Length: 430
Image 1 (cartoon, one colour):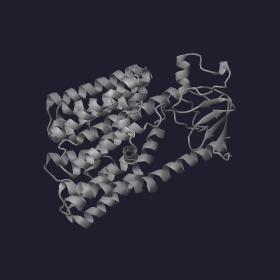
Image 2 (tube, helix red, strand yellow):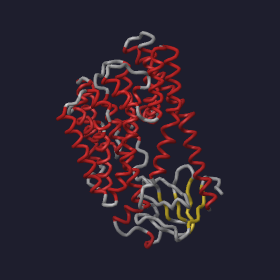
Image 3 (cartoon, rainbow, N blue to C red):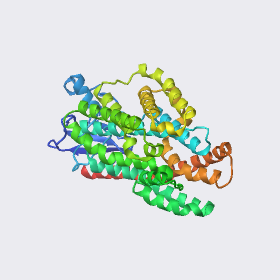
Image 4 (cartoon, one colour):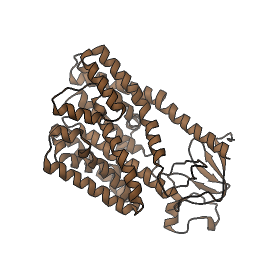
């Protein structure tokens, strides 16, 4: 049953197997169905991101060492049988990270609408670094909490998060192609198939090699690069974590350096560096390395990083405005990735520049903005004959509106339904 204020009682058996980094407490635990907060009746209180909060607990119940405190902070989980999946991430929601997402996606939309930004790919680069950081943080914290990473659950969460909006974007792009440019319909149909299986980057790389044009879903190449990376990285990380997080950090960092050197020294053609996964994994791996370094305490989030936010933003802006797209094949892509990593570190303890509420709101719907913007700006620009500034002025509000509707009507209901189903299973288990 659920109490009037949303708490669900969960009685856990004392022999429930948990990882060595989990806190084992028998008795009744209460989980709040909307916030995910746990309370061990009556005094022990844990959250996914706060430190020990049991001010009234007996001294023996409190963590005795910094290591114990760190383990307590990560929360705790039961096994699959008892199902209670809580957020094991100590990161929590950071509005400044939404601010980074907003700036990244607005850079991409501006670059596709108005060629004032010749290297708008820095937005994609920031997305790659941030994605590697966040996904690795979640995986490492889950491993610390329960002693393993549940790969099938990870891929299930990815599918539930990414596929529903994509299922809306594909027919939208096909409809726009049918209405405004029938000649692009065949190309967009092919991209619809490739984007559904996350292979658009391979298709676009082949087209670029042969001088072929793109359809209205060509921008999903970056989503394909990410998912191809995450087919491999969680598995590799699980193996590396058996030998320690420090080894995993070194492997991620050395991998990022090796890929960057390979791209810079071989000087591949621009399209190869842009579309093929082996040339894009360095930014993702750099984000992974930063996440592992933070979890180990090698890099400690603190206020001393905050002054780096503006220089990092300035560097990303200078690359976006000052260099042609071909700079992606050289060392500028690596410099943009490093600037994005510094920006993430600078925002972990808050950053006033990036916590402006409209910016955070845009960041929350950034996935939808990225999915829907390209067909819309192409329809407004190329098909309606508007100029760059006018294309941006008309296309951006339309994109924001469609993305907000998708977030409200597609993404959020599915997430709430998932949370409700978890709550139902917990009540049954109790």
